[in-house]
Length: 278
Length: 238
Image (cartoon, rainbow over all chains, first blue to last red):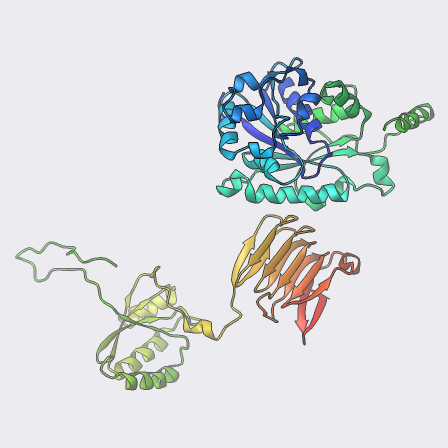
C-alpha cells in the first residue's frame, strides 16, 4: 500500500460539523474496506475522541508523536467498530503552536505508507492549527451550514487552500475542493429562512459532495460516542453514506433536499419530534 | 552569441576558413516606416556624430512598427541609410514571413531573436496606458487581495464578498463581482472595470469610489462597466 490520499475536513467557522463529519467520513471509508486514519488537529480542544467514543483509551497523542515522545503506533487507537479505522487523538493540554510543519510532515509521511486515507479534522479558524491541517491535503471537504457567516468563512478557507497549501506553494495540481452542506432544513429553505443548496453552490462555486439534513440523530450519536454514519436508520447517517460513495466516485442522486410529504399522523408525530429536537 | 572558436578546421587546400566572432552593432529600432521622416531624422543624428556613422554597420529592428515593411519600403529605408554612408546589414527581432521576404530581396541578413536584450522601446514612452496583463483563473475568495501592479487584471471566475482586487490598469471580471474592485489605483482616470454581474461591495476608479447601493437589484444579470466621466463615477450596462 503506497501513498495514502490526504483529506482535510475544514470550514473556517466553528460548530458547523467538522468533527462529526470527520468521524462519520473516516468510519464510512473504513466500512468500505479502506484503511483509514483520522487525525484530530484541534490541539487543546480535542473532541474527535469523544465523538468516536474512545476518550478513555487515549494514552499518547498527536503532539507526543510530533515531539518524538511516543511512536505513531503507541498513539494510534484502533476503532472497535470498524476494522480498518484508527484514530490519532489531539492533545488536550497543549495549544496549536505545538504543531510544527516539519513534525506534521514526518507523521503524515509515516502514515502515508500504511494507510489508504488520512482524514485530517481541522480546528475552526484560519490560524496555525487550521493551516497545519490543510497544508498537506490532496482533497478538501468544506463543511458549510446554509447561513451567510458560515458560507463567508468557507470562502475564506477556500482562499487559504488555494494560496497556502503545499500544493499551492509548490505549484502542483490544486487541492480538490468539495462542498458538504450540513444541518440543512428544506422547510426553512422554503420559508426563506435559510440559504438553499443552489445559493451556497453559486457563492462558493465548488462541486457539491453531499447535503446532510439537520437531524436529531447527530446529537444523539455525538453523546453516545458513536459516529452518526453507524446509525443507518437515520437520514443523516444515510446522507453521510451517500457522500462517502460519491467521494469514491459513485454516482448517487442527492437526497433530503425536499420537504418530505407525510400523512396526517406522521405529520403530527414529526412536529412533536421537532419540538423536542433541541 | 559566444562563438569565438573556429567552427571549421582549415585545411591547406581551402580558399578560406570560417570563424566565429563577436561584434557590437548598432540597432535601429524603427517605429515609423515613413522614409522621409527617417531621412530627416538621420540627417540630424549623423550630423551629431559624423565619424561614428562613417560606414557603420546597422541592424534594423521593425518590432515596434505596427506592421512589417514591404520589400519596397525596406528598400527605401536601406537607400536612405546608404545615402548617409551607413551600411544596413540585417534585421533582428521577430521575423514574419513578409519581413523575411523583404529581407531576402534586399540582401539583408536575419539575426535571431535576442532574449537578453531589454532596451527600453521608444514606443513605450508615448503610450503611458499600455499595461501588462495579470490573469487570475481561480475564484478570488473572501480575505484574498490581488494587486496587479502596472497591469490590467483579468479574472475568469467570480470575486467573492470580502475579497479585494486592485489594478493600476483596467479590471475585467468574467464572473460575478461581489467583493471590492479598484481600478486605476495608480491614478489612471481612463481605467475601467468590466464585469458580468455587478454585486460589488465597493467599486473605485482612480480613487473615486462608490459603495454598494444594491447593484444586484439595480442591474440583474447584466454585463456592466464602471468608468470615470469628467471625474464622475459612471456605472452603465454594456
